[in-house]
Length: 217
Image (cartoon, rainbow, N blue to C red):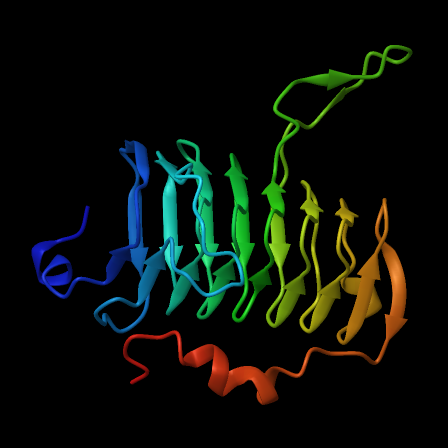
């Protein structure tokens, strides 16, 4: 899928089996090309076993803006004419699923923990039975920089999060939360503001997280 001058540098490493359902789309690496800068199926969590359910269905565009590491058994679906973007140091944990039919953007250092799902579509058409109004089936999702989405969370269409945002486990997000500003904790079903002036210790963890990079420079 890459021009030879990029492919020969081996920017993508696959760890374990993965099903390539479609590779008719496009991958754009908007960063200096380095060997193994993108890892799919990496072992970096407590979980060590794999169900061998990893799948890539890429018919649209995927832009990668730096190092990206993706855990075991993840599924990535990008529909034709859809756009998905991973910022530098984006991380998807074990069994994360992304369904992109419109646009999904994950900012720099966006960390999505295990068994979470991000989808910008209802999958089916929905309408108001009283007014006959039809609702949009899909809308963009934008996850800010330095976001930590905890395990088993669901991010749905229209979600926008600010930079430095934490999402509690088992939460469901479905709207624009950027009005709350940075350094916040969201949680619940549906998600609401739980706490302000809070942040993951990004600087304290940076060295340990970057150890998973094959080449740091």
